[in-house]
Amino acid sequence: MNEYLLQQVINALSAGSLYALMAVGLALIFGILRLINFAHGDVMMVAAYIGVFSLASGMPLPVAIATMILGTIVVGLLIERVAYRPLRGAPEVALLLTSFAVGQILQNGVLLLTRLSGRPIQIAFPAPDVLSGVVNVGTLTISKVNLGSFIVGVVVLVLLTTFVSRTRLGLSMHAAAEDLDAARLMGIRINFVVAAAFAIAAALAAIAGFFYAAQTGQINPYMGFTPVLKAFIAAVIGGFGSLAGAVLGAYVLAFLEVLPTALFGIADIIPAGSIPPELHDFLAAAFPAHLSGYRDAFVFVVLIIILLFRPNGLLGGRTREETP
Amino acid sequence: MLELVDLHAAYGHIRALHGVSLEVRTGEAVAVIGSNGAGKSTMLRTISGLMRARSGTITYDGIDVTHASTDRIVSLGISHCPEGRRIFGRLSVRENLVLGGVRRPAKDVTVDIRRVGELFPRLAERLDQPGGTLSGGEQQMLAVARALMAKPRLLILDEPSLGLAPMLVEHIFEVIEQLKSEGLTILLVEQNVHHALDLADRAYIMESGRITLEGSAADLKHDPRVESAYLGFRA
Image (cartoon, rainbow over all chains, first blue to last red; front, side):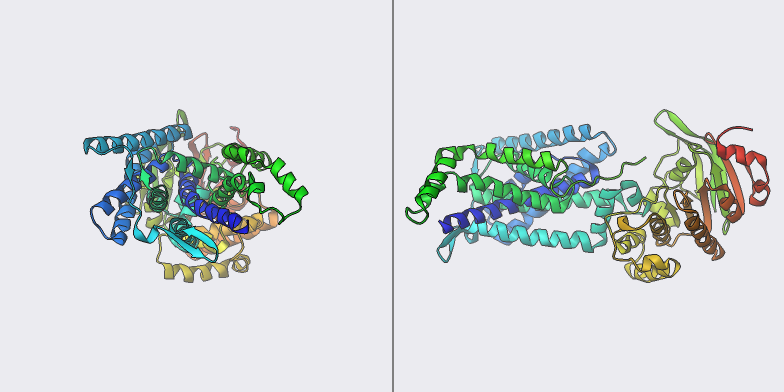
């Protein structure tokens, strides 16, 4: 019983790390440009494809991962330069629609390439050996992919936090997010800061994409939709634009998602006699196993409740002062 | 040092500057006085490259900077302390100052934080405090200190006394006076006519996007047209 719950906690930490990597990318870009970059999931998808082809070409794993990250950064920078920079200062709705268009172009582009090369839409992502199988910690069995995504996620997020709070470029990003015109008056090169934000977001998406693909074992051109949606929800829970909020929201979301799985049907898992029969009956009646299918409904009900009480998210509440 | 010739600017279809010509000479303090909406801030934003001029030219040290980017203008030595302070409230005082010197080498910035700390002892005591927790007067000090971190040769100040208690207004003008005596060239926009004309060598009166009067600060102090201009009606 304890192992079962711990298992769920580990699942949540692993999923939360991936959501956080994606959500931080959304928050970074939103903070500066007020752009909700819905193409971010598709950037992750492209990263997974670069990963598959790098691994298939026989590159050693570190080289393949580096290629994947660098390639995705190039894609991110290209998108910023071609699609978003010409729209600087345009209404937020125009930016949002553009992000959908960029996502569609990426999806169809990859689809076209797979068709032309005669591959099926769904292709296998060969999980590298280091991430295959499980590790046993005491009586716990943890899949290496889950463990890896949690550890790498936390390390990357700590590095990012250090970067944002300790370097001039990080400070410049912060300043641009808080007051764009004041940041320009400091002499900060906004184009450079925005490009850096896109590069970082793309690198984070590549890392998330690697673990996401390794978890599911296969990739397709539409795989970016669920992750970007989850990242968006995480950013909204945390308070849009706040990096810490995005991370917090990601883990809150991940725990909310495993909660129904852990809770519904819990009575069937607890060994008879370990708890009083009245409690057992109560658990069986309150959390019947057949309701575990309502996982998403449960998650969204809790989200609505959170937003009713904290409309700006858990760490939100402060918004950038508008330029007079 | 800075010369504006027949500058026009607009927000969309709303024209804000109708041919402004103005000059700031090296070592001088120049005040621009006018009522709300006269176009003073628009003129400053156009000088800094935050707004684009429709026509006319801005020359700085003989270089045409009419279409230069803001970061280039800062690099050339023009530092603009904007209206309403616009400090980064979530960042610490120190981080605000570091950002003020973002175009300069990191080691100079460390030295300069100490230097502005001597000018504003209140800030030196609060270096690690978030900017947003400072009082209004301290925030104005921070805004000026941050603008100085860029080591400007021309300092642009937009309504530095706005919303400050009389004692703090005195203090901020003392600081500006000291900067002037150290040889810094200053372009000051103010509604506090009395203080502005005491500080400035020369002044321009701006009404509805036009310069309507200019002269030495001493002369303008006794000109009845000045009062009517900043009160917003014509004599």
